[in-house]
Image (cartoon, rainbow, N blue to C red; front, side, top):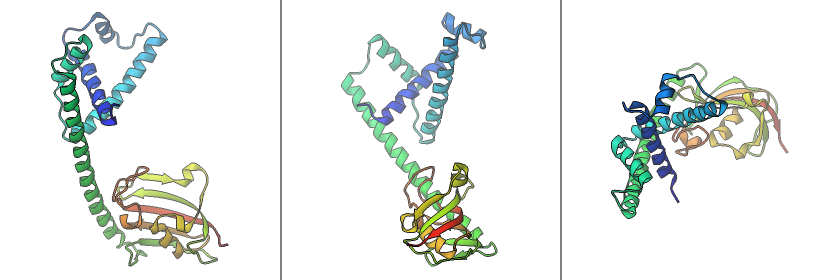
Length: 251
C-alpha cells in the first residue's frame, strides 16, 4: 500500500507535469487552443474539467510549497522523465530500485517534518512566554503558582464551583498570534460539561468566578495540550480564552 507521504510525492509529480505542459514552447493543438482562448469552453463538461483541474492544481501547489519549506528539493526534469518512462513502460531503474529509493525519500520526509515540528514547538514556547510577559503588565492581571494567568471581568454570583460541577459556558479561544481556533458563539449554542473533564487551565481558572461571571485565561502548554497538535492548535501553544460562565449545577 502506498503511504500518505508517497501519495504526496505523486502529487508533486503532477505539479511538475502540469506546469511543464504550459511552459514548453511546443504545445499540442488542444493545449495551444486553450491558451489562445482562455475563457472559451465548448460545453459544460469542459468547464467542469477545468474547474477540477484548477482545484487539484491549487492543492498540489500548496503541498509543493510545504515540501519546499522542509528543504526537500526534487529535480523537475527527472520527474518528467520518470512519468514519461512509466507511461511508455521503458523504465531506467528496476522496480526494486524504485521501491528502495522511495522508501529512503519517505524516511527523509518524515525526518524533515519531525525537525520542522520541533523547531515550531520551540518557537511557540518563546512566543507564549513573550505574550505572558506582556499580559502580566495589564491592569488586573494575576498569575498563579501553576503558571496560569487571568483577568476577571465579572466575578459573578452564586455557588462555589468544584471539579464535579456541571457548567455551561460560551467562549472564544485564540493563539497568542491572535488566530481564533474555537468559538462557541459562532456555533450558536453554549457548551455543557463537567469541570473535571476539561484541560487543567480551565479546571483552575473557572473556580475564580461564579455564575454570570466572565474571565480571560492565558494558559501555558503545561496546563493546556502540551506538545500535542489538535483542532488547529500547534504543539506547545499558549492558549487564550475569553469565557462566560452561563450556568452552574452542583449535584
